[in-house]
Length: 74
Image (cartoon, rainbow, N blue to C red; front, side, top):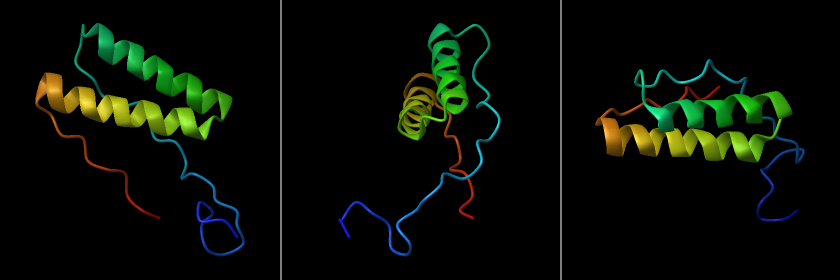
């Protein structure tokens, strides 16, 4: 087993995608990041999905002063 593999059977699946994160109306970066997130979910590209979620959280914190709670752990 490699260090990057989780313990257990080696298979990991992302928790179900939640609805797109509520962003500020009229904010072009928010709209673009949400579009990236939707596309990643649609393509089932988990790496791109995580990247988009991190970018959204970072953008909301830095530009809008809003902290988005992390999704619950199953």
